[in-house]
Image 1 (tube, rainbow, N blue to C red):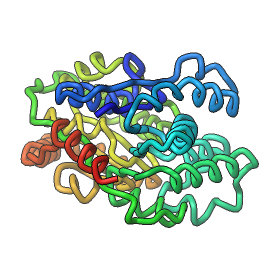
Image 2 (cartoon, helix red, strand yellow):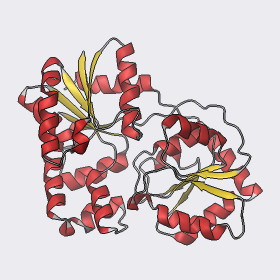
Image 3 (cartoon, one colour):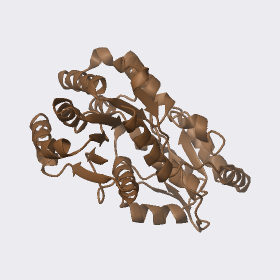
Image 4 (cartoon, rainbow, N blue to C red):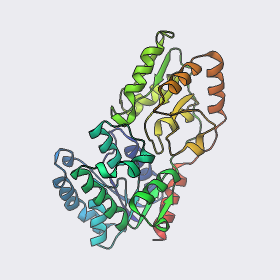
Length: 334
């Protein structure tokens, strides 16, 4: 098959969709498929609308040459790619990541609204731009051939918000790799690398670490957004991982922690909770006291041992080979 992979980011850029697109591309090519890759370059510097038009024109030749597209976005590259596929009668499959509209809204308003509540409580407060994003996203989700979610949690949110036909959706879980060797951290460094956005809740996390240092002066919070190779080196050497965002679908940082047997504290507002609930510690991201209590617990010898045992007993795997097969099975049935 000739498949177009359409993604806004791709390595060396950092981010879950970039790594996902890269790994899926490599496995599909090994299986003999011809993969066309299209990603943002100049588009990053163009205003909304112009960016969509430029990308639409750019991908037309590859859409025409392909049997269809795998799309890693619902708006910026999702809309122009689905439009091109529709015009030229090609299949289009969107694989959702996060929620672009929710992220934009929380960043604009600085309001800490949970993703699961967002469409029910905030829709009446959308700006003109956010109403346009919602309308375009709804059109894109309704006009794509199929939508792949990584969790039932996000699928339920999107079906209610965008009135999607459940029959044109599927679940393909994220990558769960085999366990890897990682060293015991010699210093108490907590990995929390992420973009400095409101919904990532780093301000609360930094505040909690600041007060906890009064009792534990040796702890360190690492939040830099570094390259994947540097990040994995840090991960293998860290004490634990912490993620307290207001809503994460299938966070790669937590999956990387599990793969490296690193104890973790994770937001309860996470799409993969049912899959990983026995592997770590979970907290209400809006409850400062609860987060601090979890942090102090994992800093004790007994608490750390319990957390380490939890993550070590998790052995579920979901390989890129399995993921690529699930994608192609869905694609073949369209």
